[in-house]
Image (cartoon, rainbow, N blue to C red):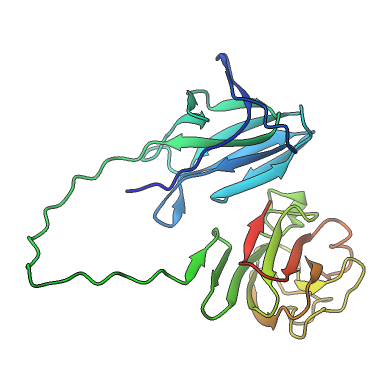
Length: 280
């Protein structure tokens, strides 16, 4: 199995009971990026980050939060399958710490990565290719999966967003994909088609609609679940598709009365160009 791993940039890092691990100051704005490796289509684990009195659950390959320079963040890694892929270490700028929980003092752009054991697979023998066969280079795939929620196809200019409402672990269930109060931003280029696969896993009705920060009417035709004020019943799903036809900053909000003011919304941005992305 091949894991795509990336590391980088400044951090002052100390594991529980361990010695500090340091790198140089970058003299730029401060944030923490956690890179979680995967095997196939599944993450090998999750990370909980606590800073400024608030906890963040990281369940994506690339997770970034802005942190005040000089502030501390505590990172704890959990293996998705401790029996097969147990946690082994943290890595930052080439330095390694075996502590499962780390305290990070942010002094720039901090990039850290938890490590998990991946059993080696014995190589299988392959037949000797015929000298008459000429390999044909494969084309670069146009379909890209950003994380477990968002994917896109650059050829058809389409985005698919799996929008899960009501994760019980965050904001008393008032969240989308485990995020609330704009903590997640999904960005798509103008003119692209977006299909939202909405699922309500809560015990109360929820809905979803793309609106402005002060509005309750969808900003794009079709950009809402059916009857968004009444909401979709628990355990039910809904799919809606719309074209992101106007550049701007919007919200994906639950319009059931009282839910959006309580924090049940994430950010949705339509950009003038580029490719879709997810920012935390």
